[in-house]
Amino acid sequence: MPSTNLNKFEELFRGLFKPLCGFAMKYTGDLDSAKNLVHEVFIQVWDKFESLPEGTNYKSYCYTAVRNRCLNYIRDRKKFVMIENVPEHHFREMNTTMETSELAAKIEQAIASLPEKCRMVFELNRIEGLKYSEIAEKMNISLKTVEAQMSKALAVMKEHLREFLTIIFIFWT
Image 1 (spheres, helix red, strand yellow):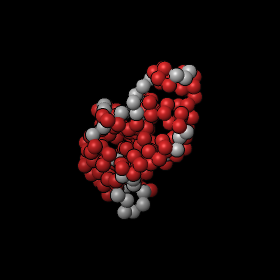
Image 2 (tube, helix red, strand yellow):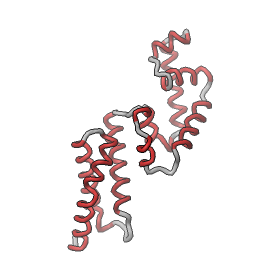
Image 3 (cartoon, one colour):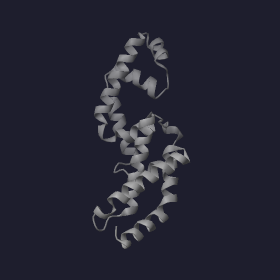
Image 4 (cartoon, one colour):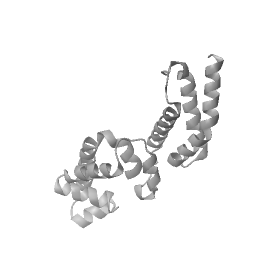
């Protein structure tokens, strides 16, 4: 790598490492994991540095790469954050093309598209926080029926919200 590129990379690393670690911490909640993820991103950037197009916005590229690494980290460890525990400013930091209100409207539309019994089971579990056994008792149906209805509801939701799945799993589950 030519020394000018090495200097650019070093400047990028020195300027963005700490802010990226703070950014990653918002997703992981763990400083060591955040640092490891940011290090992985910088290794990736180093490997691709010469092949990235001229005029690349490296800051944006790094933040997007860190966000994606964090989302994969969360997915892989199944440590999802409940939406009510996420401060509103985290939504603004998400690099998405959809506003939170638009996403909420899409979720509402997807829920509304569920068959009535399926929707009721889904809402009792995901919105009211009832356990499957509590839902079965409340609706006077079997536990297996609740499980089947939830499975059906999640499949329908997944299909309707496919393009937003990563964001939804972080904040919903």
